[in-house]
Amino acid sequence: MDRQEANIDLLFRNGLKDHEVLPPNDVWNTLQPLVNRPDRLLIILRSAAMIAVLVSLGLLIMRYSRQLPVSYGDNMTNTLQESDNPVINTADYQYFSSTRKSSDADLIADASFQDNTKQPIPAVNDGVKRTERIIFQGLSEIRPPVNISGPAKKEVPSPENNTDFLLNQFENSNISGPVGDPGPKTRKWTIAALASPAYYSRFISGNEGIASAMTTGQQPAFSYSGGVAVSYKINKRLSVQSGLYYSSVGQDLSGISTYGGFQQYDYTKGDPNFSVRTANGVVKTHNSDVFLVDNIAANRILTRYTNDVFDPAKANLTYLNNSLHQSFAYLELPFVLRYKLVDKTLDFNLIGGVSSNFLVNNSVYTSYEGRRYEIGETEGLNLISFSSSFGMGMEYNLSNNLSFNLEPTFRYYINPVSSVEGIKIHPYSFGVFSGITYKF
Image (cartoon, rainbow, N blue to C red; front, side, top):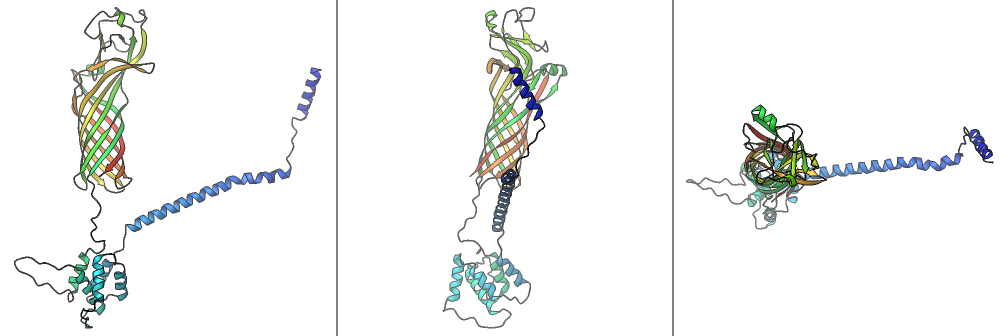
């Protein structure tokens, strides 16, 4: 029975293997709206993008149009100076007077024209038309009296009869802005919070043999710096900056195997069991439970527990890691000069100065199961070092008080950071500081 059912299945499968059935025509009409749906979505996205572009262009045009006001007074002055017999259109004066109603001086001038006690201006054709005389009379009343001091008083020409004098008074008058406007506030102080990852390396000079032995298996580790900077603007271009920074630098010592559990075999007291010579100084082990083995160079580690004296494998010590990490931290007090090359929405500054670096942390450790296993510290480091810095600062103004800073900076240590006999090591670093600046 089972064989017969299997044969039937095989018969149907072979018979219907190449059989095709076309769907009815009505099915395509039903699927057509689904096919067109992506085109409708594309049209909506294009429309939204076009609206965004138009709105952005409108905002830019409105912003720059406010920054380019039309000076009607300058145009009228140029017209008067082009000919010996200047002529001012009455319609122009009406436009000029209608647009200057905001200031107190204009209100005084308008009142003087309407005062009936004023003597009528005679219609004398002396080279200046009556409309000009009305304007000049109003301007002479707007301007305060001129005080002339000196050993000999000069005769002040009458504004009504001297066209050049009135034009000079008109050009020097400050009736274009509101009365009592002090102008934009000058912000001289800034405070900034900056941080940066840094690439750390060094220049080495001196005995090549000692330098090679000191730098074997050593690689710069991840470094960073950050802090607060305060600056004072001396003038429009130059400013002085100081502050307080925290910097962390270090290096990895590869090829040094670390074992734990050596304390039960240590019967000596006082002196460190192991000393490791490095480019930054000599690492001294303060943890008596640590046993070190150099897998690269035999002259890097100084110890009384050599391979012929003690074997960590036979003593069943716990293997921890195959590298050590030197970590140093400094507090920096910088003195920096900043010179502004471009003063726009995006500013560019030249940055240069010196820093005093105070050593605040000195540790050597290895990692075991994601935790730090303390080894000791590095001896021979200078407690105070000096570094120079040079960089370029880019500042984007988010508002009148707030801006975003991006400052690629190169730093070079002037004096060696450690006292190693036979060689001199000058570290250097490159980092990109970024942060927020507040102006007040």
